[in-house]
Image (tube, rainbow, N blue to C red; front, side, top):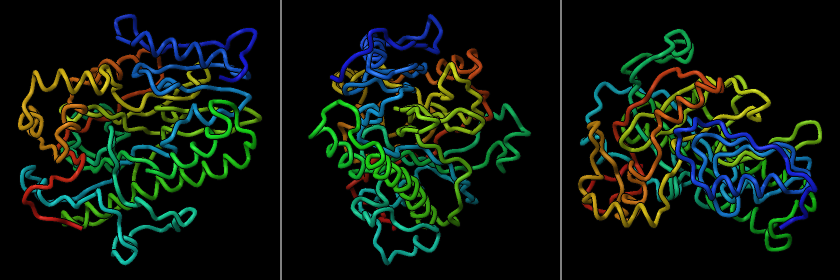
Length: 372
């Protein structure tokens, strides 16, 4: 580990006393606070342990630490308007394109995005990846702020497409180039790291737009531009400081989609977090079980078929049985508590909920119609 401060930075946890946060995650926050140059660590209510650094924390420092951002640089959540006459979950599930297969350069989806490929990196472009990444057709549910929702062009009952993914192998390659030489230490050449980092952030945004276009064309909708596209794994530079965000989104006057689970609503919120929260808000419900625990407990509690449908009437497209258990709704914290904590701490105001219709995790390899 890098050298430590003689005195640790401050740590603030924006969660109520009744919100469950794993002790290992809090320990990781304190370890980060002791790093050289660290100023303030702001932990969100979805905080949980990560590989060497907490997930769900915004960490402000005068020193740039690539390992605090992690390998999935540019990961984020985008929300796209989606206009269909009918949305029958069972029918639409079979029409989702295979988002495990990269988009071809000759594909018509390119006519719906206005961007060059950052760094010319084509590997994995247009794919969703594994873990907690997903593409979800959802419906606007409860509208808490009709005026704000209207400014976004949304009303109760409208469909939206939510895309959660990042830079795929690109970000991992950037982090590995650093850690193979410097481990968890600071960036030896911050400018060089930031140039590669910024390219991965742009790549992640392009990746989300390409997937949204692929799904729209496969389901018979017109591809549209996102109304929200917020990254939650990145570093922001301001006046000689580095704000490392790992599993948190910008919360300073922008709208954020905070993901629930496959069987619960997600929340579109207006962020207005201040300096005490490092101008950040949560990005999701946050895990309460490790993947190993979720797999073990899930197999004892659920069948595969139970996890492919939800009590909300939605359908989950996932050909990976292990991933179904690892990503079961019970493996996550209650999204309602996360939102309540953000609201109570005056970090965000709910705009509307979204309820799942079809959630895509990875292609179902059984007999089904293949899309673009």
